[in-house]
Length: 485
Image (cartoon, rainbow, N blue to C red; front, side, top):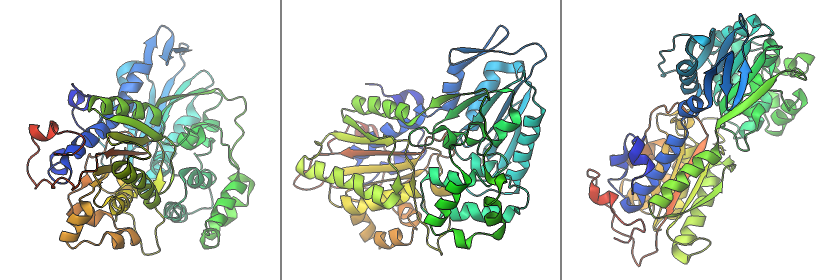
């Protein structure tokens, strides 16, 4: 049967290397199921299907929005999945677009004709993030009441479009971002703070745009599809400055904050604007549920029984990896709680890593840490587990995530790698690179948060012998998914 991954091309660039060792008969389908999920994340395709020109205006997801003669249609956005949406808008609307600006992650290239492009940095903001944010504010201030603004803010916009309020030096705001990202808190709590130390977030950009109409076109990267976490510059905020202070106190960050941040959070300026009466609508182009639907179809095509565990699982990456691996190991060995031939799926939640004082961005990421943690549980089990960030950059590294199996611990031992130490030091990337188990996709142009695929095989008397490194071939693609070769 032809699968989604075969029709569209597998977006995992190092598929052959990943399937050249370990439990290949489970690795191949697991990676192709994940690839089907990545393909389903395509915001450009979803936007192209949702948007079109009609007489006197535009149609978006079946709703017509009139744009009167002389009125403007402007595109504003920032984020890791923003470029595909902006590209689709230019292709669909052409010269009906009167201008706009988007801020993209460094390393992306764009050839937009009617929308200005700014390049900034992620996961920590840079001065380029400020320059792009100022341009978004300028364009927002220029729109009139009859204009229509198409906003495409997606995951990562908090770093890419970052402008501190008056009285807060940029370096103080950057240090706040670093502290939040290293605290291991859920993204909703991270954003509860960032929204109150910004000139754009928390609906502040929407307040500048009003009374012009806003239609948000976005990709959900948040468990539960909470709008003011997904596209918070252009929707009403549901949090308060007091919530931000509580988060900072609860995670032990308050006393270490720069004085300018503390002072600002105790002023009225930290409160988000009231957007009552603003004309704001939102279309979620891609969600974790739609991605899981695609992975389910691919799993069936490979002969697996798919089971979506959740689209909202969040927490410490190490514990997430252990939890899912425990379920899979038990299912393989004891046929409980699931049977062999089951594949566990999830997409849409976001795991975190609490970074110790000496830790740093770039040593690994949540997906890589979850994979190493899972490997320690799966030792000897006929299971393959894959964890990755759908944006292609797990924890800001050049890897999207990693895939491990019941042979990983043995292989690590042979190479003299200490997986336990890697977990304790949050340095998962190095051993996974040595094991050749890092997943490389490059920037995917989308962001639907974390994705996992766990393929459960039978429990034979002995595990199948690991395949020696070598080229992926048709024999591997035809291998039985239960792994009892």
